[in-house]
Length: 306
Ligand SMILES: [Zn+2]
Image: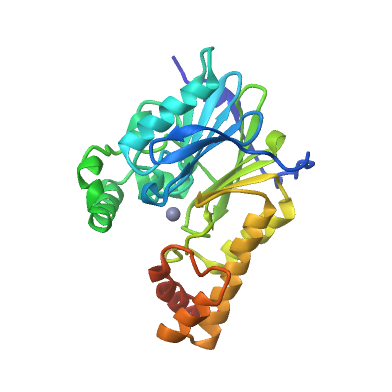
């Protein structure tokens, strides 16, 4: 049987309209999941906020005809747990299960094997990257060397690439719930996307937002990244699900935007070592995780003369 997703998908060329805000959402924790917490953040929208050990967050959007899972978490085991949570919150009724990979980084894709055979969607760039054995091999090696406890688990992270790639904006009708997949161009990586659920005023931002964690810029573009952060702030939705760290209203995006201004200031003043540590300790971001990423980010900012 042909997947119903093709009848649900159409390309849009106009920018997404901003939905009227119905006031702040009140996220409700439904239950713990493996290394995380399952929250209800809108009538159709849920998220899994992961512990720092489990790295990336994930999302679930439930319509009458289909369930969309946004990213598949750090390992096949976490992916299986996410799939079970998605089927549980959807409740009774037969629905097609779909998945999105917001970008090609391992912590967002290693659970894909649990969604093998289903329709998967990403930007065309990420789809091409995930169709290459080399991307998976390198990614598994890299994560296993940084987190040795993952080595055994990631041996089972079979390569499953998204079946649909797109550029621009893609709208999916999940049955009573529309979601907008917006390709960002080169921001955190050369092929990121965000997922908007206008009826819930929810945005799954993936790694455009590292909240409480310092970011990785290595394969991205600072200017485009900041442009999208400013657009997210202007969009003023009720709940933003970051790629890493806790979610919340537009103040979360503003905090992340401000943290980038702080980094830019450090790059311009040439702070390093003890001076940088002192500036960080005195900043509102003194407890943010992954300080070790900062020198690399500052180097890239200086190289690109931003
Ligand atoms: Zn990433």
